[in-house]
Length: 386
Image (cartoon, rainbow, N blue to C red; front, side):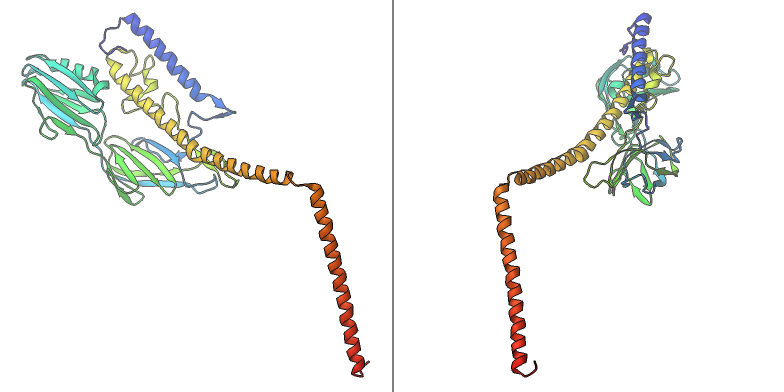
């Protein structure tokens, strides 16, 4: 790491070479095959079409209601009624000089944690901006400068994105937010397939710019492009996921969708892993270090979700099917043991005995029938009919 900018150029070059090698290794693993099929580069994910990158940052489909590839595709359509916002506070420097107004020591707290800062009167606001940005991986907060005003905002969007300024010494006054040195963002409100969803509504919910839906076997996550508001293109979800027949009903399959784990797809709002390479927008360490760490953390978060999805599939599908088949195997083994445990000689004796009984019964019926015929003949003779 080069959080404090203390590495020498040679040390940065050495560290960057290790980063490049790690990214190459990740790319190689993601592009590899398992039993002749690529499963980690997006080839084993549900196919989607109609996704407009200016409206949607990412669409991840975990499950559809389809039981086979022949089932009709499912669609997603609607509009963004309210875009998600960031948390933001503003510090006003000395007019016309873009400098600190007074000495102060304060703690900035965001969604990722806290960091302490000390400033002196007439310090350039650019210095404080750079310090805040170098600590953004610790706090989840970044700073920008416009004239004499320093804006401190959250990296993320939504109600979970927060800022708090706690002054322990001196004066550091901010405006905006809740008016007390704190602020929070707002979640998006969307209308999807005719139903409106806010932060917590029915089966779908939004968190920042991400809308998640899970109903009737259809489970997906839709990340909206930051700031987008308006109509969404109709998106279509088809097959393409890995399918397994793991139940006694061979006509029914279970699907496992694994999104792309290529470096260009791993990351988030701060950037993707491929941008950490030499020549990338987040490469070279130095001033890029904090944002690069955030991008890496976001990539790890994605991997955690994928692992959870695979583990969930195993627990809900494979493990339960395995338990069912194990019980079936036990029942079959018990039945076979019962058959194998039969005394053949004894059973043959019983069979012969029952065959004799059956033969005697048939003979008895024949005699009875003959007697009935004789009685009928005798009655006919008595009646003078014979």
